[in-house]
Length: 107
Image (cartoon, rainbow, N blue to C red; front, side, top):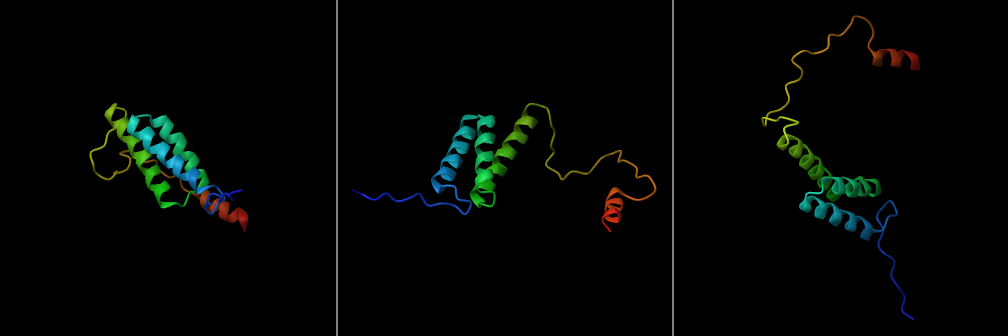
């Protein structure tokens, strides 16, 4: 009888092979242009290992791909510059801010 090794686990107890599989699935979905599949796979990986550098980098790539698709479809614009804020910012009313009111309630 041969003893089988357990899969190495990440710090959340999920098998490391599962994380690798989810990352591979995410890459495959992105390469195929299946953004919904990529989002689903990366969300599962983030739930298992949110602090993993590979997971975070791939999550960023999925988000960037989604944003670029919106730009390509004409639903968003980007000139390559940093956002400048609203042309018509909301005017604040005099008095306490919500954060000040919450702070007062907690005291």
